Amino acid sequence: MNIKQLHSFLILCDELHYGRAASRLFITQPSLSQQIKQLELSLKTILFKRKGRGIKLTKAGIILQRHANKIMLDLKNAENEL
Image: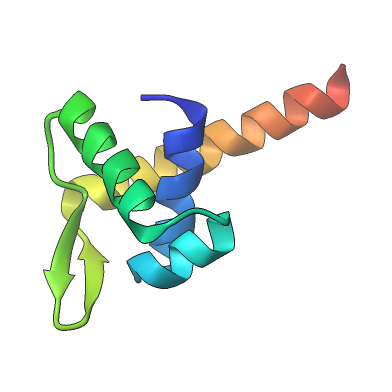
């Protein structure tokens, strides 16, 4: 797991759509899919379930979202403090 993956994960949480999230991140949809797949493999859990044309967070995804938001906030605060 790395910061880039967490950032991409959080954008995907906001959009709940791979195409829109990829556009916001200025990357391709397959690249975003690969990042999320690698994150899921490293955590040994599924973070999103397909729902019709979109996706939704799993219970594990909701837990990671909460922690990832805190991590990103802590990083921003550390940068501001330095």
